[in-house]
Length: 203
Image (tube, rainbow, N blue to C red; front, side, top):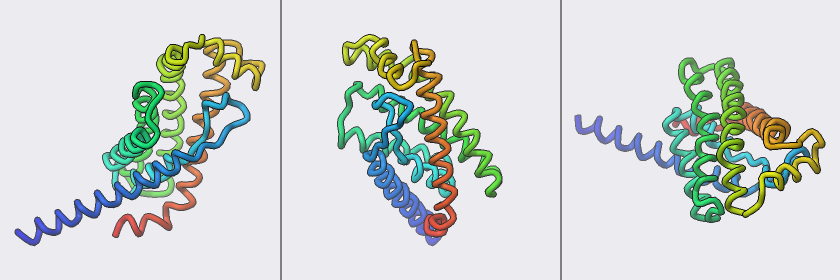
């Protein structure tokens, strides 16, 4: 009985260590932003969801949510916030909308096919939740905080795409493609590296 308790404790410590390492990697990747040609410069691509998704597949959805939370928290500590924490909360929700469906589908049956299905569903959820949060929460909050009208953000989008003429078209032509591209890019990288990394995470 005592040996079983020791084994469980060691397993918990190992899991927490893996979560900590993946959270640190995700935080570092979050610092590297890539501007995109079709969206205003406050939408920049990063690959911080890659270690989060890898952790979700290897350790389960709860671990993935924990890694996502730690990533946001560490970034908050390192860089502070311009939105009173609202932007960070929204990023957490958007990240979870991607990794949780993917993790749940993959956990049901661990196969490449289920991983692909999970990431497709996760990407769809990422685009949907990200668009709704931008439309109803993030862009209005940014407009209030920076003392700029929504039209200022629309104008930044219009300079890149003449089809962007209001908040709805800003979301449609900038936010939706941004989140779809992010989901596809993260999924592709995860597929390339997961098999090489998973044996280490499962030890």
